[in-house]
Image (tube, rainbow, N blue to C red; front, side):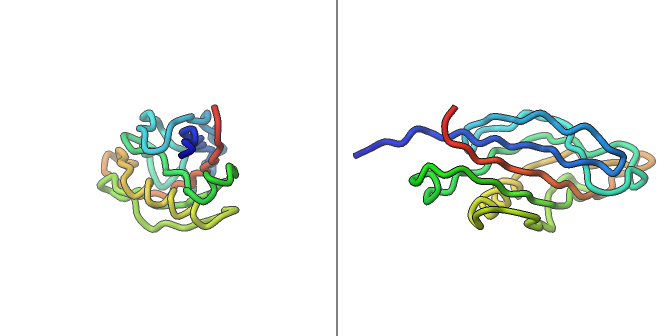
Length: 138
């Protein structure tokens, strides 16, 4: 039986805020491992909130086994809403080169938790767009 190396998934949060926020650096992580807490830029005007949402916890997506066996890299760009409670919803695939890269990203994002964006001290929902780059190797 041949054992394949554990792939690394790079989850890039390079969404651009309407005000032109700097993209976040790539996060290299093993599938299903935690992603470090960080602030994610949002899609939409900054007038919708005073404080942007902050990523609290979540795991990287699983590498689709069919692409892993073929050792093929891929990507998915997912747009979603972080609601007033910090949960994710309303997923939309913006772009992908293989449907399962997108579906595995959505499955992971569904378990992510955020500190919600706030407007005048009250939690508000906002949209985030996050690209995922799947790569095999180190």
